[in-house]
Every structure is written in structure tokens, then in C-alpha cells.
Image 1 (cartoon, rainbow, N blue to C red):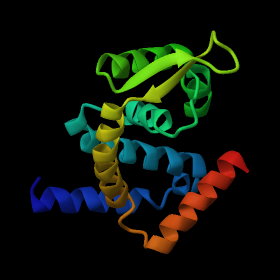
Image 2: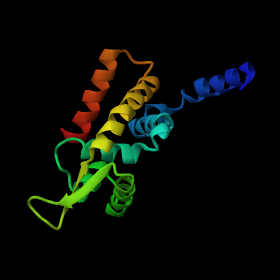
Image 3: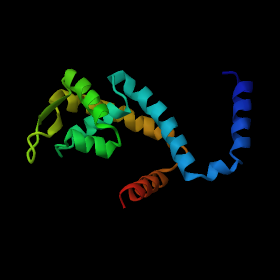
Image 4: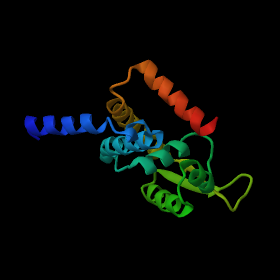
Length: 155
């Protein structure tokens, strides 16, 4: 992109930011999510992961033995999406399924040693992507944003 094109793009952004929508929290969250997803997915690509599969791998490695239903509920995804994502991770030998402890019909998802190793590497790339997306914020502001989002989501 040429410098003139970049300047024109910035001028357009500066002009449109004056619109009332730039004060709408839903819009701001959606815009941050889209931008963050692009950067995150680009960072995770070298590990053949995307945000959704990376999220499942984190939860599978948490020691909390989440069931597929719990993953779907927590990640706000359809159970069929979870099944497809877990199938792919299982095919790559990054996670395993096992009968649940309370309900043997429910399948828990657990990271394998290979999955834990890949997660450790991918987490470094994900943290760099997060830093890139939130570069305009200092460490205190990032902590405050994280705390406010967690409070808004889970009280």
C-alpha cells in the first residue's frame, strides 16, 4: 500500500470515527473481535490452528476435564461445531475423548502430551498477537480491559 493510500485510509477512519456508532459498545466489541481474530488466526496458522481449535486445546489442557457440551456452552458454539473441531484435534492426536466421570455418556476432552506441547508454542504466538491488537493500551489498561470484560461476562 502506498503512503498516499495509507493516508487516505487513515483520513477516512478519522472522519468516520466521529459517527455515533463509534460509541456503541456492541459495535466496538465486534470490531475489536474481528480485528483480533484476523491477527490471532494469522499467528496460529503456523501451528495449523485457528481461534476455535486453539480455545478447545486450552480448555482441554486446563486439567478441568470439560465435556463437549461444556465446551459448546462456554465457547458459545453449537455442539456440532465442537464435535467437528474435537474430531480434527483428535485426528491430529492433540486431544483425546473419554467417558465423563459423572455421566459416562458425556465425553470429556483432554489434551495429549503432543497437544500440550503444541499449545505451549501456540500460546507464545497468541500472546504476541494479543499485544499487537492491544498495542495502544499500556499494561494497566490491558489488565483493566480484561477485568471489565470478565466482569461483564461472568459477574
